[in-house]
Image 1 (cartoon, rainbow, N blue to C red):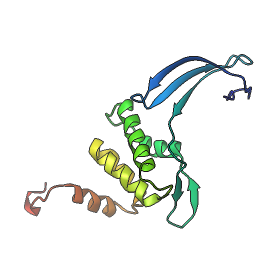
Image 2: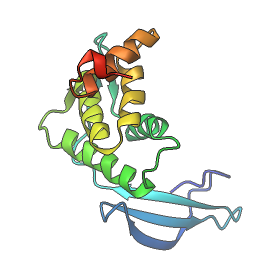
Image 3: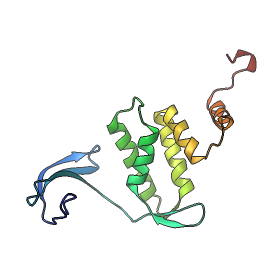
Length: 157
């Protein structure tokens, strides 16, 4: 593993332990050249996935990009980081087990929204606002009203 600080290719593993509910291995590494310490994660990858964007463009699936977007939607929410890691791993496993290597971005977005809806409604609305490209407050109002159970109009405060 190349050192991210000095580029040395001869780094040493100092500690390994299971991470993310035993679906990854966390390794603490040390670079003897510069003394830098860093962490890497090792995960099973069943197949190389390709995302088909809505404009037809193809790009390699990037777990870190998925993780970033989910963590942004979960920012300052009362959800444990381990639960978020489990959700992300579950989404990736679900994508890999679909049997297809080419996956439409719409499918990924729907799976993420489904997972977020089960964990945190606020994160779900945040993600949906970007995913569905909300342009005005009315878009939020319409989306949130679809989440609420049917309440007669006279009872709405």
